[in-house]
Image (cartoon, rainbow, N blue to C red):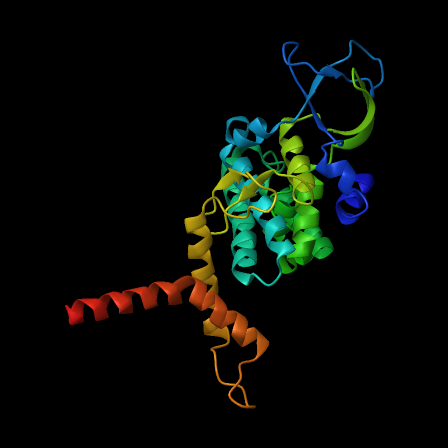
Length: 295
């Protein structure tokens, strides 16, 4: 896990590894789809068939995940993207809210499989008070954090801490291995479950080649056609620009600078985004009305 984190953090140093796909994510598979064996485990029985996680797996992730698991995966991908562009406060807010909603759904869907389901009320109350003192949350929320059903207080306050916690919990069983296949020896990330493989691939693709992304406008997942594609369509890219411009205007409306009526750099950028988005559309409508009045 430490090595995986270093790969992500030191993007420039490891570009050749991640962009060319030399760090595969391995998952268990059937004999028909086998691309190799678990040559990196103890020989306590027959070796297990493995294969590399593919883009087609990411595209069909919902087939392998429950409703809350799919919602959580998409929220984490959106959070990774948002933290790469800290100036986009809308995307960051939406991503953190999506993580919260995924955990709310998780608590509902796992209500009958809680670790405390068999405890009597007094024992559960005692456990809650003990955990509350340790974690710094109300008793019931402290139990939920202990059961991995909600993030802790620090992660809830800082999206960077939140991403670190959420991804690390999902990759708890993943590990870096040296895999021997027909192509020779190569490092790989071994994920005993496909769900962990999705998170490993999402984390790696965020800093390297094309992969699964979440459209900031509609919130739907899509596979990139180019490594710099951030939206599922051009229409959604332009619509999101307009929404972001409007949000910026509410926080800091455009006003004339104090010297010679010039605009500040941030104001110039806001005005440029207005022209590229809503402003261009409004100007076109005005020209249309003028032509109609002349005729």
